[in-house]
Length: 291
Length: 316
Image 1: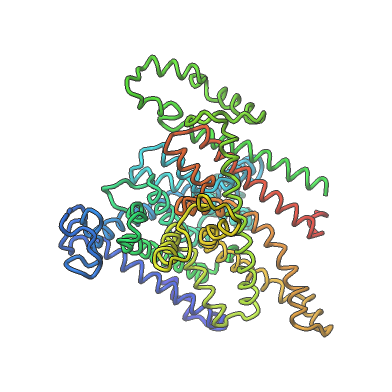
Image 2: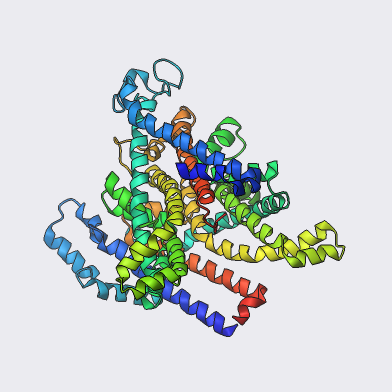
């Protein structure tokens, strides 16, 4: 992440005061947290003595830090720590690939509608507006309930309901870039529209795209948690952070850790990505429309 | 002004048509579709399925079905619920008040608190308060709303016993106080994200205004700092916030859905989930349309308010 470190060495940055520095520090905290979390999810399941599916009926509802289960057990006596890490693999993968897909869709639509300003651009942007008129949870749930909720399908559905932000950002960026001299020059040279759009203009809009993509990971992880919590997302026995919370409400009085532990983990992961996105916004000097 | 009004209305109508096409496509192009609910009936044969499809008009080409559905929608015939055979509009009408009550309370609360935090932070930029609130807002935006609700229930219902865990009122007790008692926790939980968003935007809007020439003039005239802030800064900073309030509607509505599930609040969100569970397509479709109409109406009203308040828009 050299991009994060660059401003620290240039002199203009010092004048922007303590707050920017602190914000970058937050980004680094986020980066460290998400790296640790990812590593734990990759390596952890091999190190823990329990399988995430192993059912120990004698140790049902064991509270955290008692006995052999570090984070306690669930109603079936399965190890919460093992399930949490296994779930992290799924939730983080869903978040990452949903981000990739939605950034690709958003970028494609944004570039095309920003470049062709006439009827094509206007129509595409109206479609973006129409998608934004639905509360995304409603659309997401309707799709998830109708389709087979495999992890791949959930990823696709999340991407299909979260590409609009990126499209808007890219559209605005391309619209302002398309009148620049270098684009005029490319046109003069007879380069194809596709070449100008994706090889000349797009690389100049990469900063805002990276920032939006980082924030989309955060959003995608939250969305997965929402649908899975409501029972339409990742289906058990496959664990995800969201579906671990699915049954937690009914055990809130007897086994509160079942709700608290996955919730804190989701919050940490999402906060980390939001911190990183915020730091990148400053580091890449993307003008802030949102905060 | 009339031209602007007409333009804005026209845009909303076009958007609503696109919205209805998307909604219709989502429910009809996915595998299964409206017929899938009958496939599970024991002893169902293919001929019987075909007959039902014929009766329901589901064997016609999709564009024809869409036009037919849209035409009925315009006439106020939104179909009947598969679950209890009642008209969709009646079913939704019974649930919409609870949702609007929840959203209204939460929005009023978020705007009050968020405005205060935003102004307080903007007038003391880079102070400890400003810094804490900035981080706090980012964390608040990262907390899953439903989980925050669960934590609330754990603390305020199970541990402290102060607030009820769910529902809109205690059966047999219809007093206003009882309603309010049930409203506190869901509306505060729903406010979490909105306070965060609102305070961040308010801070930016206030900072934008506070450095402008007319504020310096007001100070130069010898007005007290308080008067400058209240009369000149906040008034102008609120203009972009009206647009934001309109833009926030989809996320508040989405948040309400999740909050309602946790607190068994009898609103549109719960109805949506229940209808999904029953594959009650007409109601699901109706709710998608109602939520989109609410959102479009919200942004339309916001734009009109801004045009009323800000003379520059009327001219252009």
